[in-house]
Image (tube, rainbow, N blue to C red; front, side, top):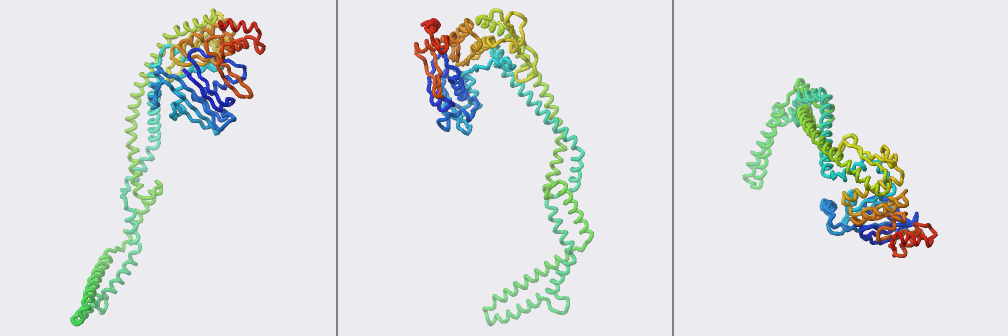
Length: 548
């Protein structure tokens, strides 16, 4: 039940703190006093649409807090545990909204996402707005009413799971089929690409080696000339002594001198080292010269191979032979993957066939349960309508076929006649007053089968008057014996029911709400009876209605 509501800076509400009792709570007020604003504030706290225009004129932020008693609310406790929220007998919801339109939500002072807040709110209170009778034209709403009556929660969960599994498999199969179709269309092209790459016998690092060899082959004659000049300097072809021989002679002469000047011994060793190093250099230069091949044929082969690699890299949009190798392997896997995908497609088709049977069984089970419950549902509604003075009413539930979905393959229509004649579609033939009474009957039934702890009726009695209004008040009052019920009304017959009566007022464009004393309540009922001028007769009638 809703224990208290605290509102600050919401539209025309500056500051409001109010507690509510159990049972039936009556709320009345002049048209335009702000009853809808009060309901809007509660709706915001419960996860309703947040809009910057809702922030009042006395600050940058509006805050709405709603405190609920949740003792024994098992579905709510399960949701809180699922979302790691602290549990207790009291639940405090707080929602803040600033002028930028940004809102934040808290449950027991812990921040929560809007979907979590909305899911929790669904287990706390049901708000019947003034225009909710329009929902009778909503197929999902009608189905929800019948399913609640039939107790189809477990069957609905099974059907929803079967549907989700089925849709998942259908998507997977569609994806695989699309891939196979694309692969089939590209197969010949990919095979040609792979064949050319495979025939190229690619080797990582090959291009760098070829580029080095090409430079040598292209300048082979120059290189030989350079190296021949080096060899001629180190070992002249004419009568000149080689540098190594001259160094050896220098080493010999220095050695003789060192016998008299010991300090020259290191120089002798250095001359020896220089000679040995020069001999080694001469040998390596000779070997390098011998390896240089002046071969136009080999140069042509190397350049042809480089041209092939450059062409392949350009065609595949890569920069290295290593990337070409990766592309070749990718094409190979893609060509091979078609057979793997084909196997997967066959598996998915088998799984899909099983899933379709599971879904069909779940949908059939729901259909049978709805079919079985339809007559009892209609009978219960008719009993309520008879109590509300629609004695000749006919109300039936018609099950039809709808496209398959998470709730099965059924469509529900409510057929109605107030005269006992052939019933027709409810939303097309019922008057405003009849729709109000039908909606109250449906809400009363839902309250019994959903164990909703609190219910708000916002002028559900629109279009009803006289003894029928009194009967509606009695039904709402009876509902208040088992749950907390808020009735926002303009009808004195309804307002006279219950023990707690609150009045919404507006003064200087500021909305407020307060609980009425015994005498204040008499005058408010009298105002509802007679209008702005409260007569003695209206006061006497009010006392009679209230049984004071």
